[in-house]
Length: 68
Image (cartoon, rainbow, N blue to C red; front, top):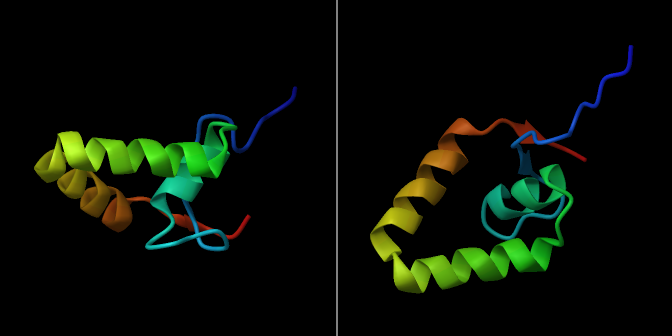
């Protein structure tokens, strides 16, 4: 039986963080480039500012931290 620990998991990445590590953790958990998730978050901030800030704040408080 094999297990994948980080497949689809959401964590805050404390090593590659800029603000709280939410974007870096989402990128690493989904095998995406970190810059692309940060760019998407920035674009979402301009289109949906209140929803994006609220989602980021909740994610920063709820997601567990991980040192990859």
